[in-house]
Image 1 (cartoon, rainbow, N blue to C red):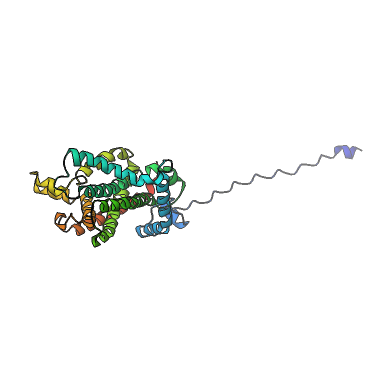
Image 2 (tube, helix red, strand yellow; image 1 turned 45 degrees about the vertical axis):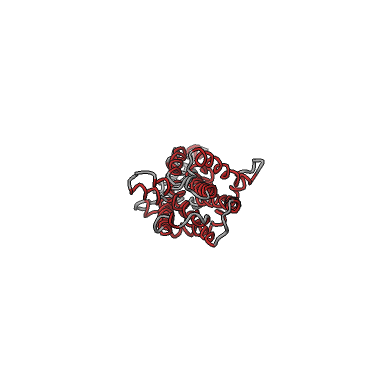
Length: 317
């Protein structure tokens, strides 16, 4: 009994020592660019190379044409006359210009076939004006689409230009009727309308791409452009014959060339030369086809590259 009472209690086993914390994994050394290259990462929305960008646009050609057609169809969908406004609208503009310039100001004097002359100028100028105005708002007015989907942003201004070309083709049907009513005969020179329109579309697309980048960075540009385009219209011989008006002035010779060789006047002159037999080649500037091609290449290529250089910035900020 005494031995049982004198036996010491069993000792508890020693508590295990806490495990040492694991050392953090070593961070790879190098710049962010080196790390991105090591793990195959790329910048989201980075600008592709110019050839790759062209291929992306070509792959979305069906989207561009479908988007242009949808915009054209929806433009007058709420109006009673519907798509007839595509023809009525430029005709009303031509009627207003005829009243003001042809009747009140007398600019029709010395210009044979003045009504076909005026309507052709108004239709061709409207094509350029509408393309540039639509291009200016192409990015800033479509921010929801730009931020939601990944696609080459040049698709937007190009589709707007294509929409304006489709609208011009509707107007050309009315122009043909006007030419025939006023006694302008059908001629083989009417085929020159096709290359003239191709050159003008290339110029308009380049100008729209240029202004799309400007409008994306400076939204106020869309408010300023109508005044710039209105001034350009008055300097392009839309409502009057530039050679006839310039012959009555004593402006410096370089001003004559500046007005005659400005791109809007060049494309208007080409269309009048192609469609109106009383508008002879003597009224065209020298080397007019070369000038038209030069303006198309300068604006088309220059505007495209200028827009592409800011591709990754659209829709941000």
